[in-house]
Amino acid sequence: MARIERLVILGGGTAGWMTAAALSKTLGRTVAIDLLESDVIGTVGVGEATIPTIHWFNELIGLDEADFVRATKASFKLGIEFVDWARPGHRYFHPFGRYGVDLGRVPFHQCWLKGARDGAAAPLSAYSLAAELAAANRFSKPSNDPGSILSTLGYAYHFDASLYATHLRGLAEASGVVRHEGKLESVERDPATGFVTALTTDRGERLEGDLFVDCSGFRAVLIGDELGAPFEDWSHWLPCDRAVAVPCARVAETTPYTRSTLRPAGWQWRIPLQHRTGNGYVYSSSFVSDDEAAATLLANLDGEALAEPRQLRFKAGFRREAWVKNVVAIGLSSGFLEPLESTSIHLIQSGIAKLIALFPTRDCDPALARQFNDLFGRDMDGIRDFLILHYHATQGHTAPLWEHTRNMVLPDSLIEKEAQYRRSGRLMLATDDLFREASWLAVLNGQGIVATDHSPIADTLDGPSNRRQLDQLAAIIARAAPTLPKHDDAIAALIGSAAPRGMATALA
Ligand SMILES: Cc1cc2nc3c(=O)[nH]c(=O)nc-3n(C[C@H](O)[C@H](O)[C@H](O)COP(=O)(O)OP(=O)(O)OC[C@H]3O[C@@H](n4cnc5c(N)ncnc54)[C@H](O)[C@@H]3O)c2cc1C
Image 1 (cartoon, rainbow, N blue to C red):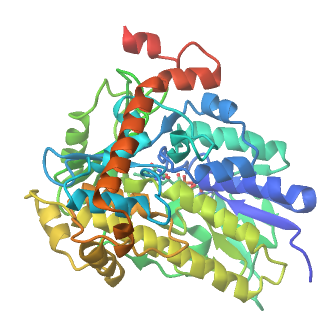
Image 2 (cartoon, rainbow, N blue to C red; image 1 turned 180 degrees about the vertical axis):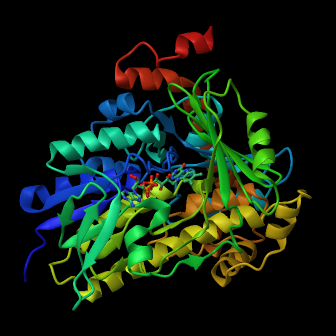
């Protein structure tokens, strides 16, 4: 079967350059890769918090961690702190990594549920080293030694989105990707197959290809406008449709976590970087005006705003057919779930991984597209349910958005998961769900959903032994946390400087 010889990527945001870096690394010089982007159109310019799957991507493209953290002014991320979500005045932490350690065949969370029901367990976060480190502004990388409590850690990064795209561009161009500047003006299609054959720019350049990756962001120029793949709208479940974002000066130590604070018409993010702090208010335009949202954001910054607030518009949902004929959509062109759990960059790399695994020949066998779309749909459905859980399980907020989300009709899949947990303490997950037991437990428990039973398997441990083991685990974590480095020192040690830039001022 004829091989793909020319591949064209439309778009040079995070999705475009991640795709270019990964495909050029994987395909070497066997496929010529062109990337078209427009400086006039620009990129979405946000997307600075990640989840631990980013390590897979960084390894794939051979990214050196110290170079990457230095170049993108990154900080480490141990999880997300949710402020005021369960109810006003409440905080909880969704940590990366694992809670405790499984005891024999009994999953840790069942030991904890049994202990909690016996009145013998500490709060859940006492069994997460990541949560304890975050609370103390400390950081350590995980250990590979399964006997060490450090093996329970997981981590990701916060980084500057534009510096990240620039860094990836450098890597991709060094691997032979050719960048073309200009706006797409017309698309040529094969009249017989409907396949896209070439893109022409406003500068008169013509880019021919056998396979096209649409990374054109919310515009979805190829997959939407040209090929008409329908958009499945989920805004009835995830009603936030706008954001206003602004960077501010950093004023203290860099925290190793993202903070999400509930606001009357949505929520506010705080993402600490070495040189600044990223902030944004994600809101529903049905419940607050743009001006009021910007004013709320500006009134809730830790330091001086470093730019004018920037407004963004979006809609929750996706295209179940993200691969049509010889066009594969990756990034915002394929869909968007709001950034509450920082999943979009993961979805980009997951799209790239699927494309590599299913890399077609020139005929683009429709069975490959079906498989890609099926897997992508399952990713999106699972993440959607996890996000809706945050919106639905809140108490004590009287603002109309929160009344609405508390009372909305949930997807059946989420109703079933929540009911099963309440009834039996079981977490019913599919093997390919992105968010695993620790994440569901963190958010269910954090947002006040109580399990009324535990698995009978946990009864193989008698109450006193269970209590002893829980106490030991909490004690090990409590002893270990204060011995580990401060987060800023961990960054400085990695990038080889005394402290991240700005530290001297920050601590003065
Ligand atoms: C408010 C908000 C917060 C977010 N926070 C996070 C987060 O914390 N973590 C996370 O993982 N994700 C987050 N995301 C998502 C993340 O920003 C995106 O997934 C990521 O930036 C990828 O965007 P993209 O490359 O698909 O699109 P864009 O950045 O929009 O890039 C599109 C590219 O296509 C080009 N283009 C478009 N049309 C044309 C044309 N006609 N001709 C030529 N070029 C064209 C543009 O020039 C640009 O280069 C957030 C998104 C939003 C809206």
